[in-house]
View 1 (cartoon, rainbow, N blue to C red):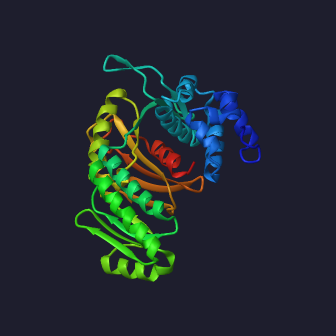
View 2 (view 1 turned 60 degrees about the horizontal axis):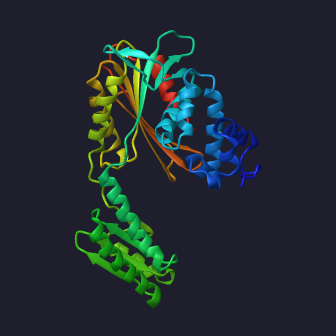
View 3 (view 1 turned 135 degrees about the horizontal axis):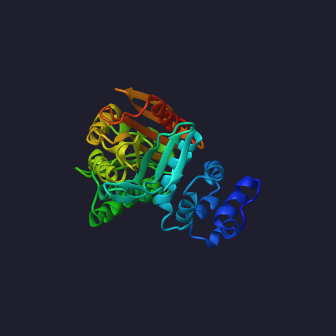
Length: 361
């Protein structure tokens, strides 16, 4: 079933059909491509994202190397890597960079194809960029699975229940199954009795759950125990995301040539959940860039759905930018410049780079 023209702009559908084939537009239910899911999802932010994607594809279609990137975007197995390169390329193009993809160059005597070749329009100096995605750590996956299972157990007993919950640590699957069963029993009792019920397992979980008519009882319990109503807090994610990011920077620095104004771009799913403050994160990541004089800058991005306000933080010339795009997509960008780079990233490049990530999609 083709999405209605009034829900997705006709030019967007035409562009998607031209680049990805009419099948994905006309019959998304029969397609396993990630774009098919976006077409089927009727949330307003997906319509805005698809319009941005289609316009960006039109903008980039004449750039060198785009056909190779498009081939990867068409392949569901390669889409995740390719869309990260596409996102960065589209941002840079929009802010005035000349962009090319996968252009060959010798690095330490070996032929390499960095993800991006960049220049400021009107200038002859080239820069090269590598884009990489940090996959979610096992610790993060375990924490997310713990939180989701407990949330599902509460909602499964009754979607009308309200709760206050703190998860102390991620749980292994056998332990999680046991705790989930206890949570389900407590939530069911709250539904049946119409009264607040609580569950406490030392070092594991604190839970208060109640029907709406006993909201006062839940609020009193939450106040006494230091919990927050309508919230599932935790579990904490005990993984060293700055270390993982710096390790990836070290690997990607080998893929770009010396003698140019090079920039690395990292997408991280959980860097900002690592327990570091923003300025501490910037200092830590900047030290990782200082090791490589041929890397002029580093941009680390984390994106999620949510409802944060925009924000700016500066620290020693480095920037943290929080932006809201498509009404619901929160973008966090950490932009670090290497003061020991050779050559130094020119001020005009730094301003264009900040503009690229300071403007929401």
